[in-house]
Image (tube, rainbow, N blue to C red; front, side, top):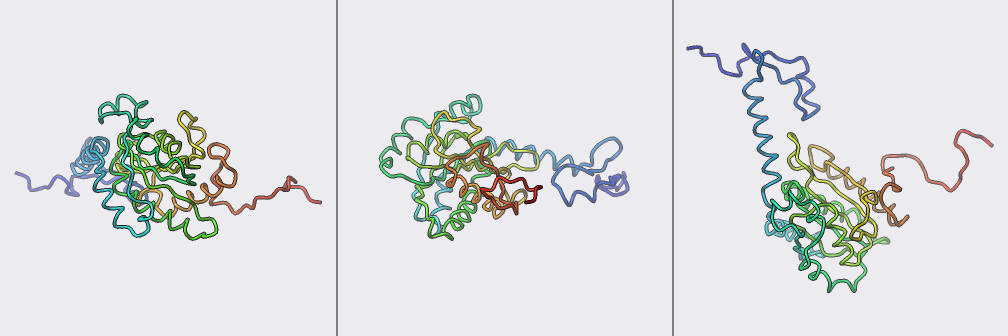
Length: 277
């Protein structure tokens, strides 16, 4: 019997692109054994596939999430977390009926009604979406950094509503929360559809004056928030820019562009830059 191991370099043919794997999680430069993949790469693929399935089906542990938030001194003024639920009764109905995940159930709306006397500037909403891992892994750290960034501007201090978490929720469910709380704006954090290299990718959606039934074109999105993707600090930088501009312009969506990385200076002067006077 041969003593050659399945991944022995004697039988695994290296791929010239293997050196590029240090720059990406994409499955490139895997090598081969005959006409097949090396066993190690096949096992990694199967593990990633299982993690993606779990990300969709494992329920969000709301109680554990609340414990995480309660340990944060920065987030204490915005607690306790408001526990809400969409019209989708369970995970199977959520996956089969996307429309039900876009709206709060009546009990959740009623629980928010007593707060409608206030006029909040902003509300943070967490929704499990298609990856509960995204919220459990990243939401607390991201919101801490975001609120810390907002608190650096005491002259522009915002009246932030209690943080809300919605089970079986999709992007539009934040509109119901924003409307029920009489908030000017909603920042919704949601688990994105998992890929084979990103089971815990989180997305952020920013909507001005959100109400049930508004068009998706009236939102701004920042995607792939996670340490291996768009890092927290970079996402907060973009999010803070969009939030500041949306309050200045009183809008979000296709008319609000992300120029957080630009060095351009806005001006009322309409003169063409290529013309001289």
